[in-house]
Image: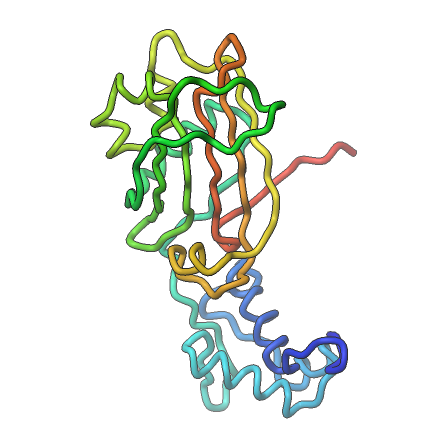
Length: 240
């Protein structure tokens, strides 16, 4: 734990954040007994009163539940959104969208050009831009701004407006994309993103940039996707 001089955030809030993170990641499951105040204080190198403040904060917000004579237990509600697994194939990505069937809220639709680099490919003549919030059970988990080549959008306007885009592209014959890549970076939520995802400003987010090109290198799909940090899971097998 950082000293008070190196971090302006009070120690008990830092500890509460660390404990909240463990609960969010499932390290401490719902109904599980958490360590004692003495154990928490020893782990984080703080006084017992500071550990108590952290526990009291999480208790007040309903994350923990003290039981007289038994200790303090996790009372974490079941997350209404499932973790989004980062996949590395287009088929797997399409399957993910089909499996989750997200609720879509389109908050913008117009014609504009994507902010791409020269290395991303060649721009088409026109694109349809859609900004959406994806949710499950009413809980938003990502904001996506996507640009779809107007020629493709015109082939299935009604479907593109009410369904996720990638599965529809995968069904087209011939398939319009011959190259697909995505880049994942970690950042923090700005004010607008925080509002749409219902998280505090500067909360951690995962940002995914996706670019699909046709056989001639023309960009047919470009998306900037921002996921809640607690909705993303990245699993990687490592060679041994």
